[in-house]
Length: 122
Ligand SMILES: [Zn+2]
Image (cartoon, rainbow, N blue to C red; front, side, top):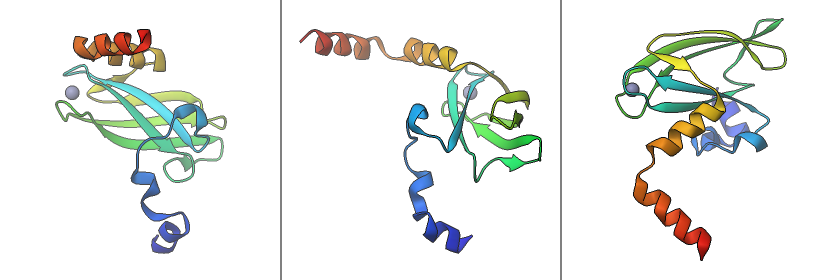
């Protein structure tokens, strides 16, 4: 694993999440914590995180949200086009990207939204 890390630039994977649209190596999942309602975006790397099972892929992950730190173990089954076929999750549930973004907006402090409006108008 050490030489692979060197080959691919070390800590790049641990950096900030790239934009989903420009990221052909990543598959994105959106989950909401059942306990505190926090939406979580997950990135699975097609090369490193997904297990190829011939007819598709499997992704194993224990998701931890950033508010109540609940552990949400999950297994996702994908087809060869990296589309979710089925999933199992404990402690949370899967949501769509649209639902995720709506939850983020809903959770933003009101002050932030006002600042944005002022900046857009200027
Ligand atoms: Zn939570």
